[in-house]
Image (cartoon, helix red, strand yellow):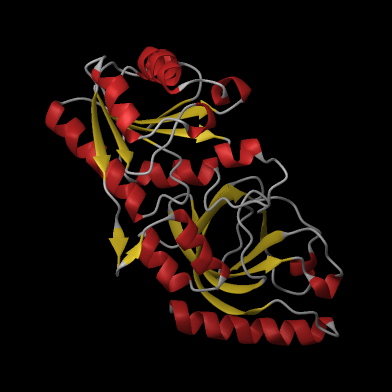
Length: 305
């Protein structure tokens, strides 16, 4: 998959592109993207996904609490799994926000991407103040011989597939039902950063990741799967601020079972399987270590050895 940020000349003319924000890349999004793949195969053309970065909601309200199910790196990872040819990232800035629906199609979609087909969801909005809807998209694109396919509302177990509904499930700690709507376990891709080595000092060295760009989930301990260089490992993660050590910074700390390699600076993918317990402050390090042993035992039962 080719990632396109600025050099739009790399995009072959006449491709089939899914267009949207695709936060979380849930099953509804996958239906849109898979339609792009299917039509591109029928047309013997390239397929791609076009997203906006930052999310327009974040651009217009920079002080809003983070709500991302997937930041741009995680979204790129998930889209790549679907097997499209291009992942196009459009910079959503002031100039982009001021474009009329017609200007967006003419100056961005046609001049930079030049598709033969666009695939969007039923609720897709575009242009200044979100004034453009799917009917406008069809009308404008028809003038340029671009076919538009609209994917209707998708449901799973009678529940509408939406990023908002997935967020609500994750906030409630219901990772199993979130997985049903996503079509994959909720996951975070990020770089392992250097920490204060607290975990190593107590016998549980952790891979630490910053998670400030993602929606906030329940502070606590989770059974997780970790992907490193294509290999999958079992582990346990603490998502929170480490109150036993008077921590303040939000971190994801992951202890990998039967693993001893140096992975500082490497990209890893942490997939959340099940919530284990709430994060809490312990009166002593020994008490914390005993609890971690219990957490690991419970995680092994969930994930298998």
